[in-house]
Image (cartoon, rainbow, N blue to C red; front, side, top):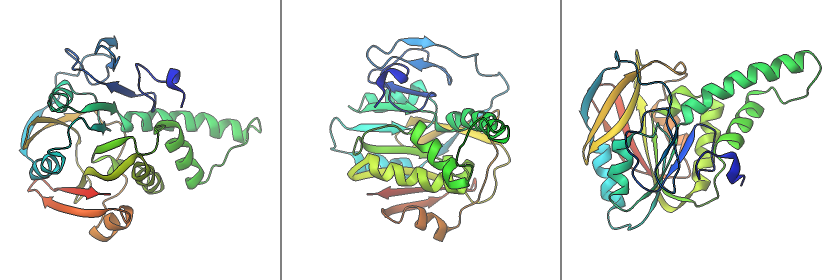
Amino acid sequence: MGLLSKLGIGIGGRASRNVSHPATGLPTGGRVNGTNGSVGAVSAPRPPEMQESARISNGLKEFLWNLDGLGRGTMLDLGPAWQTTLSFFIERGFRVTSDDLLRSWKLFLGEEEIRLQEVAAGSDSVDVTPWGRATRFVEENLKYRESSFDAVLLWDILDYLEPVVAKQTVGCLTELLRPGGIVFAMFHSKKPEVFQRYRVADSNTLQVISAAPLCAAQRVYQNREIQDLFSRFRTSKSFVGRDQLRETLFIK
């Protein structure tokens, strides 16, 4: 699985971190060694203009209710490695792997530009179709064993991925989840005006952090499209907030 290709003990994309114990003072771009929680490399501090707000999250509350009694489960957080989120779940017995998929997507797009230049110059051969591109991204950045996780924090990531990439990502996550595993996903009802990140404050509250955009929103998914993406799951519940965000739980 290429363990040495990951930072720390993670086995996913280059922007990932695998954490088994709380780390101290972990910033958005930090890299974590999962064996002792130490910071291996730290990015520049978050810009001071970032704004934070709190939102009540019925979806999170339902997500935790479904995880209650699981014991020492495993969780894949596809957002930044926020200290508060990591500590929240680790204190509840979970082994948390944090893998910032949108940052990996941004890096991948830069590499794709180079690949396309090499193809145009005749020095390389690569599948340049949307499906081929999606396959490369998923294979390079979601390299985990099948049935590795009990839960996934997907956040609003699918809104920012190209539709074919979003479809393959969900397909891959389906294989990574154990039977009965659960996905917590969010969808915008219209294209977001600002780029946001999320972290867990408590059992029914999320902190919403505005940040410099990594990539542009690609699609606003309708209910039927969401159901099609997660056709191999059964929907638990969906909650629509006043901030144009829909929280949805999918159980495998």
